[in-house]
Length: 353
Image (cartoon, rainbow, N blue to C red; front, side, top):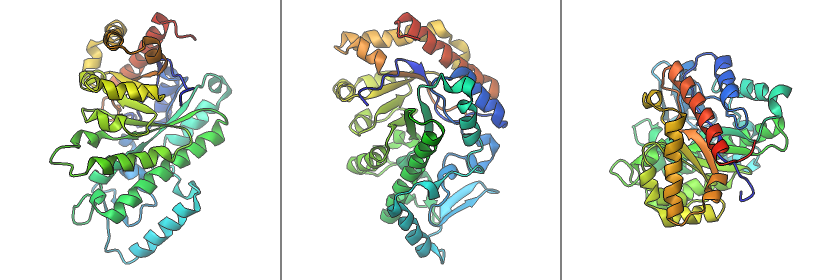
């Protein structure tokens, strides 16, 4: 990890609002050509909901597309056999049986095919994928009696292995398409904002252990995306390689954890600055205003003893969150703004081509 330097290049979060796969892929190619991601398309259908999307192969999982609901049926007659089969596959160590099918990710293979074209492949520095994180998945998905599966010891272990195998399968697929290219998988954790509140009764040690298990299971870079405020010391204490945070709204909260942030950077960690707002505020911002904001944050950290050059080398520029729930014109504006902002920052600080 210490040898990887994103140098303020732009990367995306995951979701886009497009219904047409080609339009989403071409937008990514236009705005994020060096570090593209495959698009999650929630408006394409319920199976691309961020929880249903990674539910294939989960023992006992019922997905009701008509009602747009999913839950684990522990009372299903074949649940014990499903569980046994699941662990047989996990123990075999091959992520292939945990593939994400085209029905659940319409944009995945078309995106990889697009970026493998000769006119695109030569620009690639990294390929990014994403998985819903274990904390958010476990708090959101429930049993039939509406209890979050993360509080069931058996299902909590299943969900960690499920999401890890989904992530590992993506890594394997990326290596098939792009041999030798660095890979990065983000674990999206919107529900980390609930940690420490009445809505989340998990112990800190349990959260760290679950996150570390999925991070450590990857061969490439691991990332965690949290689009709200949380206990940043917890995420910084994990073994994650890249911390993606909402730098437009919550940078001051992260800066409260100076010691933990310093230790994270010292061990080779990277920051993914979600500095482009994924809201109507994006229409009120431009490259100049966001570049001034970013420079101000750098100045503040540098004044506190952080190495400015190290920060620049270890930074990505991203939107503050996914764009799947936004109008298409706004989403396109946000990705274009992210691209232009990263180019401006790289030019201002002479970070290369």
